[in-house]
Length: 409
Image (cartoon, rainbow, N blue to C red; front, side):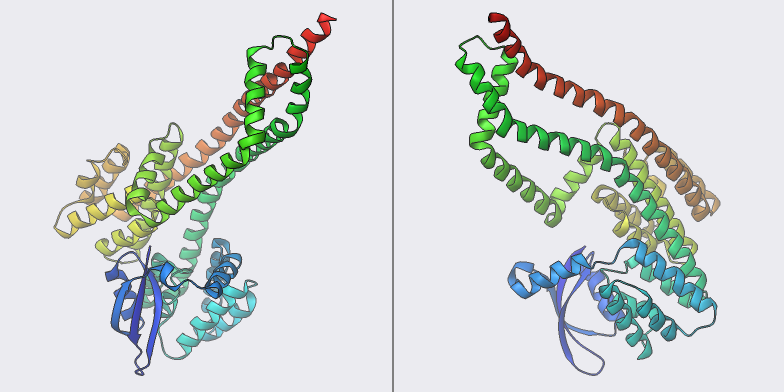
């Protein structure tokens, strides 16, 4: 999502200037027009031009109070219950404003309630907060408003967001334990190399005996870490920062990075299934809500979370606009598993694409859950063996020369 700086007039004639997030300048214009603003100027926003200490503080506070997915799920479910109970929308929003614990989210709900109370439709009021409510969320609410089934749409939305949250949590949770173990091992190893081993190896060097190769390597590594370790950490930190910022700011870097992830052994196939499950469920949800297939594909491309798949979906959208099929485009890309292409072909031929996509989403979600369970069970013993070997080498490098020294006497 890019940021666009705009200047516009409200329906009262007041001039306002702000920043809006959107996938393209056309998307930004559409969001602003939905807010009944008359655009006088719009351009790509350069954050460096308007950086101030106050904005930095505000950004930090926003990050600390950012709205989490589980908060949006709870808000959506409770709002649906209130609307089902025939509580007016503005009053329901006022209740939710007091319910939520996150002060940032409470403020946003208050602003939405004020806009709705002033006569703005709910979906347009939500569109003023794109960092919290995604384009997918807004379009689903809009379809609920048009069909008169807003409460049903909100319940379905909450279930959808919750399923996506659980799937992402499963992916992150599977990596937390291995990442913690590796980080702890590296931290302990660094402390030993910098503070412990130099004191022990000093005695061994003074003894004058010929040291084993592994001990000499360990001594060299310890000396390097003690003398130049801080430079290494600075360089590594700089490289990581450069790569992360490049991926965030450059679409080309992001495309390369996302493509690299899909080519990773084991994890690449798993990521493909995650993205395909997200694609199938999102497109199915939007399509079944009555949103046009072309617009559904655009929204799905924005929420897919991978630049490679985003490009494929946008290309399929162009084909659909010209009278072609999604499956015809998908068939040319190895990132789309053959089963998905075949199922979409059947859905397009039978006119039941949304039903077929639901089945695809369910299948891949179950596959991903099983794969993560197996992956965790596999990673733990591999980590034990690898870390055990590392500790063994470390101990052997120290104990072998000490043993030889003792035998010499």
